[in-house]
Image (cartoon, rainbow, N blue to C red; front, side, top):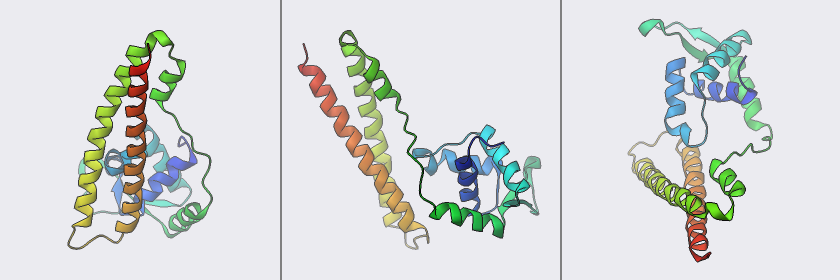
Length: 181
């Protein structure tokens, strides 16, 4: 059984874009999706099995299957199920942030350690922002933009804005820690 209903819908979402093997689906989660969603092979393959069992996906007959990989495609029932999920209200955000967890449990004697964590996060976020800006430039300058471009830009804009907010929080936190005795 897949870890959660959202895992099944995430996999189904990838299948709305084409015919893929479990390996190909994992590549999607390791690519642009990794900025906001992740799934492991241990989640993807059970989800595919469940989607096939429920009639939402089928094994695709492809002329060439490499290394015995099965390819999957969404069924009309799967597309209908996906569209129903897409229009349903979202659940509560299940937010987990290791940096916040460490800051929350730190004590004043951990100030230097926490400052180091903020400085490291600042570097990571700066690098992420460079990637987002490059992705933004690449998408905007495409001669023949893909049909999904508007939705990709909304997703990318969220990444940029949330990263800017976290960058600001890290900078202010470092400054505040520097002012503490």
